[in-house]
Image 1: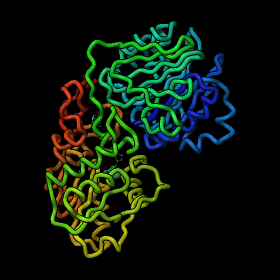
Image 2: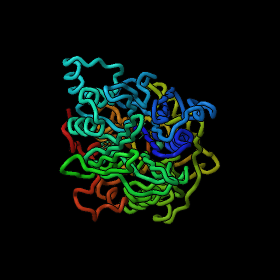
Image 3: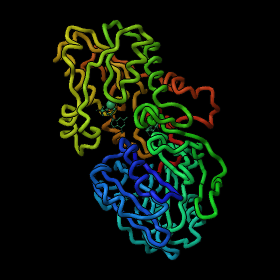
Image 4: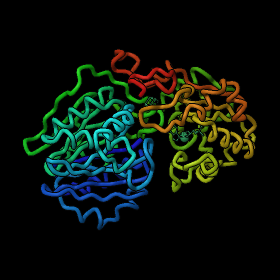
Length: 449
Ligand code: 5GP
Ligand code: SF4
Ligand code: MG
């Protein structure tokens, strides 16, 4: 999980990138960085923390230049330290290059070992650095070097590259992560999500297609495909959990999908209950959909402290346990003496749901019927989402009934794969327009090492 944003051809490039990253903050809160080019030199600032912590107003305005790329990071490969913050900047024989990456390369380790044997010296342990070494070895022109590197790396990547005079965007051949092209005044914009285009007032042009490379320079925009077969495998969790509800992923509104996920859940598993509540924030739209479909009242039964980052970011289980309590609380008046349907997006380790169920019961809920808008997560994600090592995945170890007992719910239902796909409105699309479902079924669309 990460967010990337870039703009080419605007005198306020750094300020717009700051605003764009701010709109992508939900995709990563560990570090943020911006590289700006004035046509001669690339200036970069990176730091740990939120976009607003890394960049005070004066700092991002101090960079002049018509092109910029930026990144917000959520560690999946490599350490979370500052050294791994992006954009990653390096020098090759053609000049300076800045790289921002969202995703995870499945063959990074093998490539890294090979490159090290051949003399490359790595500065970081992030998989993104493999891309820079491949480019450095190939030499200019950059677009050819990049294209060759893309044919060697495998896995999930939405990548933005910037030299002093060019910006290049690439989407992996399966399109695991969303990546959109927009236009702002006379400038081109590339963003992980459309919500950032809206924030700066840019027009959405189109999705960047699987296996596509876009080169922006003084000649304009060139588009080409760098692979033969392109099979879309958009990450199901972009719809279920990650993307912001006001974004469209692959032309489909995330908010509408979440509401429909809730409706599907009610069709599959209605409950005898008095009201429906959602776990903020990603469970709320689904809870509304569930309530509408089942004809039950929807209540604001839980509050989220919006000044605490996403639970997963806490480094260990003990801290995560505490993090859940810091983040969520129950509105006693809403649930006391009531049979409650509780809607959430996923159960990963089962810690969050267990905590929430007991909080509801401590606050007087007489029954808790948990409904989850994704199927059980039984396999780890290889494509850049932190869904734990396999042994930490509760659904890899326990049956649905066992999980129900473990979290203390009165009933539990996970949405079926079919129901989930139906809710995205993509079920009529051909096989090559589908979702990644690997963490539900263990079928990985790429080699696994
Ligand atoms: P757990 O079951 O591991 O205690 O936590 C599940 C909760 O964590 C869900 O409410 C979900 O919204 C949230 N969550 C935070 N980060 C992630 C992530 O990377 N993937 C998924 N699927 N859920 C996450
Ligand atoms: Fe998304 Fe799961 Fe696929 Fe990872 S394995 S990309 S979390 S659908
Ligand atoms: Mg949640």
